[in-house]
Image (cartoon, rainbow, N blue to C red; front, side):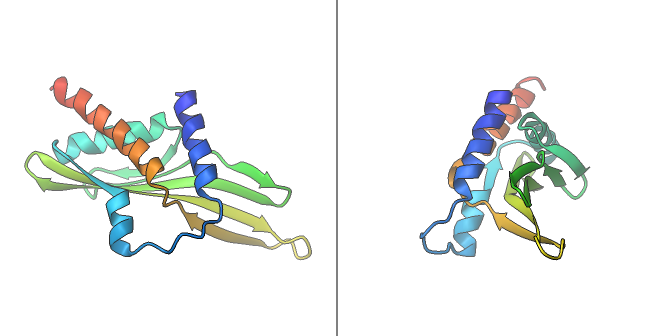
Length: 151
């Protein structure tokens, strides 16, 4: 588990660096952030929740009826006056009797304190590195497979 968390954290850190790539369209972002599974919503929801915990996220809220999950990683000191924390939201919906869709949204929340006024300013950055989403979806797929096999 530590290795998985370390790998995800490394990818998150690399993915947050400046990039000269053109901005992605909403459809391109959606294609990175969602995946369909051949499993009912309740099973996929449980698998998604478990995987987020396995990746080191602390679940702040989870509602099976709405399919919404919020979670955050441990806060890290990015610099003397900046703290950063990874966060994720997940939305799990039914797309048929035995099909469901998961949409994930990873971001880094940066909290910067002004040197002169002491005021805190939030600067959240979406993480759009496809490798991060691919890793999470692969883990969710494995968890779904295990749960379906044990039905």
